[in-house]
Image (cartoon, rainbow, N blue to C red; front, top):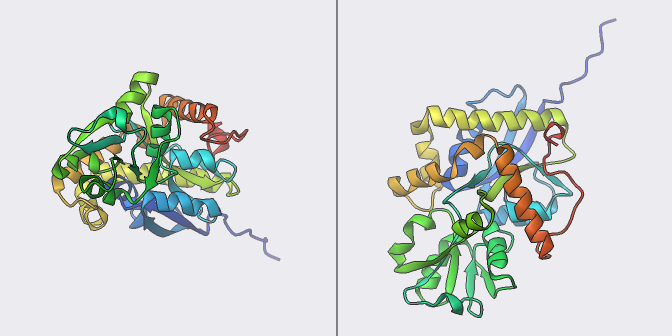
Length: 291
């Protein structure tokens, strides 16, 4: 009688969700196009706006997802963070923009367009104003036109907007990333990749390694990612897309590292002190080896 064999736990198809922004499509290109060998592990891929991903993650159905760190702070019971694929850095934070001549003192009582209630941009705004601002969530690509038209007094812009807001005759009132760095000396945590905690440690570790290898592939073959990135980008200018990737895909994307971990824990601690995020006893990372 032959030996009874147990099917590999790696024979699994996982749901993977990430945003349409150039940094995410660049990071996940190789993984999405079978350039990385992960044995029998495969993915059912979904792309959407990051706030849509934040809200969908409340259901706890998607196995792996890009989320804003603000959303991660709300969902620690279900999801744990991976060390690869994150967006952290310096000089890359959200901006408060308004029509020229707007006084910064007026924003506390004004109508503020934000790219989602669970975005890190909205969380930073609450920390900066030390209160509950009058915010209106709309998709990030509609914020600059809506502020330009006078529908909102100011807006919090992210992604490519950092490079294109002058095209809408807007000016930057506050760089929330610079404010964060001056307050903490730490990089600003914007978004990260999470996995459901009830997935096996072997699979979590394999996915974490796969994302890091996908980034390394993109760095070695940047031209291979171009069509995929441009297909999903809101801003089609090659220069803007290149700046976006260079800014948001950095050493923290390969591995969050100790400094990145400290930045995330500091953001969560400050937000919990203000009651913006719930307290939890869950560890930050999905992989127990990282705890």
